[in-house]
Length: 68
Image (cartoon, rainbow, N blue to C red; front, side, top):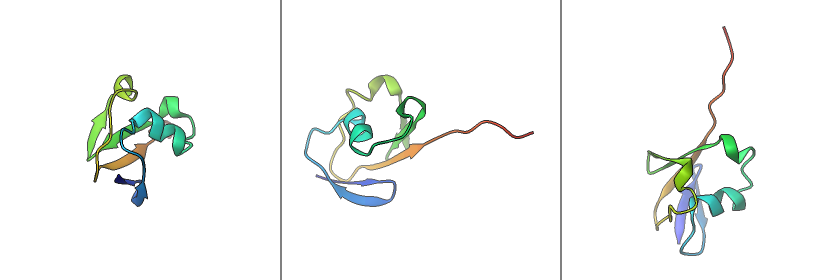
């Protein structure tokens, strides 16, 4: 199946979950990442059960604190 990850088209096996994608993409500090699929946020409690589909667009987002 083809999906877009961070703007890059990639090929993966069917049945890929968000959790497995995070592992395969070697996402740094996965406990702090927010994931959107087709511009909708996915709750971290569903990473293990949310199965990606052909044509999905996935983004990994990190929210940083700080500043004045």
